[in-house]
Image (cartoon, rainbow, N blue to C red; front, side):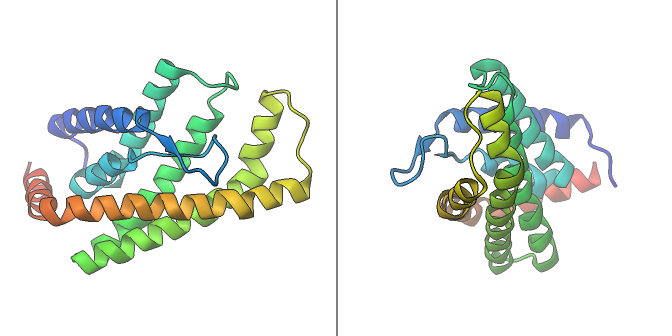
Length: 194
């Protein structure tokens, strides 16, 4: 695996800052609970992954969540939501990156985004059922949710929310990718030479 150079680290820092700002511009979708928010902060992480490789994308996901936790805090006092956001982002960008790397076309990017959305949505439903919902109730000192209640929350809210979130991110990213595809490829080529 190629080491990240100074240019990569500076770019990762800039993309992390952009991702953090995009994370602040979140909004709810009316049919879903208020703790489920849409934001487009995975786009800079995906750009980082495409140019510098998957580790760069993971670092952008990590840094944006660390920044957000220190700047806005967490209702639980523990970064449960930030950990969930980090894992969701990684589950979205890695499959997208690997599918696109195999197919290397606009169609390949579309397929990658669909795969990334599906992996993220299904995985986050399972993780919310087994890890994040119990953690929220524990750290907020709320009564524990029953298994049927957690199951219905995961299936009726979290699964469709993450599909919609992934599809919205994919749509916005494809609009950006259509304009930046050549630039991203050039940056990747320059990075591989450096």
